[in-house]
Image (cartoon, rainbow, N blue to C red; front, side, top):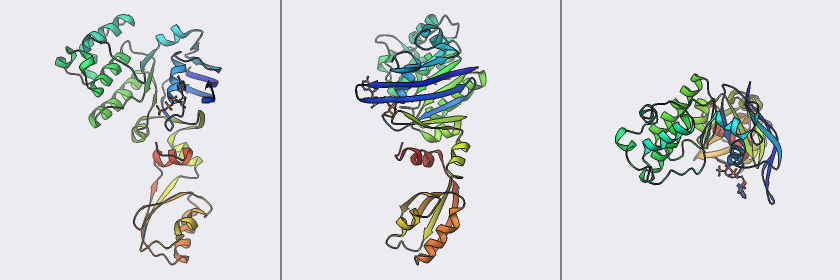
Length: 304
Ligand SMILES: Nc1ncnc2c1ncn2[C@@H]1O[C@H](COP(=O)(O)OP(=O)(O)OP(=O)(O)O)[C@@H](O)[C@H]1O
C-alpha cells in the first residue's frame, strides 16, 4: 500500500508558487528524506499532508484517505513534528504527553516515551514553556511517537538538537521504521539524510526536481565521482578550462592548490590531461564518491 500519494499538487500564494504540480509516491515502510533550499516548498507540502493548507490544484492521499476530504481519517494514522510548533503554557512535559495519549486514545507509558526522547524525570515535571529549544523539540517528538503512528511526518526534526540529540533522532527514526512506520522528513542536515533514508526527493522552487535513492541520484549524475586534486600551483584560467571539459559538472578551488571536481567517470583522464597541458603539475589526486551534499548543490545550484 502507498503511504503518501501526491497527484499534481500545486499551491499558490498570490504570485508565489510554493508548490508546482508535485507528483510523489511514498511506499509504506520507506524512510523518505525531503530536501530543498530555503523557500523551496517543503513545509508547504507537509502542511498540505496535514490539511493545514489546501492545495490550489491536485490532491494528496495518505494510506488511501484524501488529506482534505478525509482529513480526520488520514491524521489518525500520523504522528507529526510540525514546523514552528509551540508548547502549552503552565503544563509540564509529562502533562503534554498525557494530553497526547488521551487525545490519541492510546495507552503508552509517558515515562517510557520521555526516556526514549532523552528527557529526564526531573525535567518531565517542569513547565515545558521553560524548556530550551532542543528540549521542547524532544518533547514534541515524544508526542508524535504516541500511539505507534503508521506515518511519522517530521519537519526539520534535528533543528535545535545537539550532536547527541541528532544521533538519537536518527536512532528513533530507524527504530520507528523497524516497527513498521513510514517516515517522511524534511531536513537541511544532509549527512543525516544520507545516513538514514531509503530515498530522497529534492524540491526546487516548488518543483520536485529529483526523486531517487542516493545511489540512483549518483548514477543519474553520470557516476557522480568527485576528484580531489592537489596541484603545484594554479594557473590563470585553469578552473574555467576544467569546467569546459565534457562530463565535468562542477569545479571549485577548495583551498589553495586543491581542486574539487565532480564529473562522470569518463572525464577523469581528460581533466588530468588538461592540467598537464596548462603547465600545472598534479602533486596528488584521489577520488571520492559524490556525497548527497555534492549532489544537492548540483541539482539546486545552491548550498543547503
Ligand atoms: N502563508 C503563506 N503566505 C504567503 N506565502 C507563503 C506562505 N507560506 C509559505 N509561503 C511561501 O511559499 C514558499 C515556500 O515556503 P515553505 O515554507 O514551504 O519553504 P521551505 O522549503 O519549507 O523553506 P525552509 O527550508 O526555509 O523552511 C516561500 O516562498 C514562502 O514565502
